[in-house]
Length: 99
Ligand SMILES: [Zn+2]
Image (cartoon, rainbow, N blue to C red; front, side, top):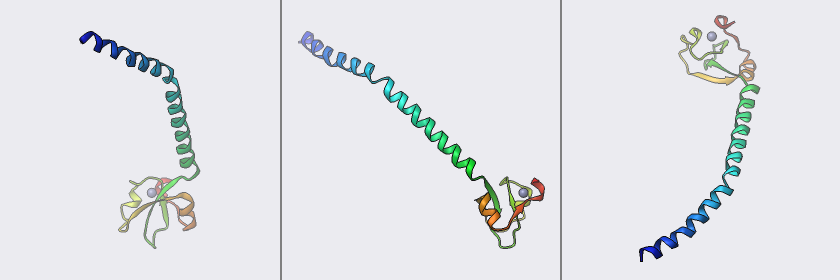
């Protein structure tokens, strides 16, 4: 009874081994390709639109490169992150402390 059971288990095990040997390379390469592509896209998105920090107040005239800049400590409104393009649209200029 035991012998027959072991004999039956051998066949699926061999089938599994063959299957994993054949399919080992393809998913790994595919995963690496996806990883590289997403890293490239992520880098591209960051590079094309640099982010700056501004005080979301109608009186603010500066934008900041760092969220922890001293110039932002006086901000009594929200500090928001916008693209450099957006900051320039609002006619903001670079903070004097960060020039
Ligand atoms: Zn600043």
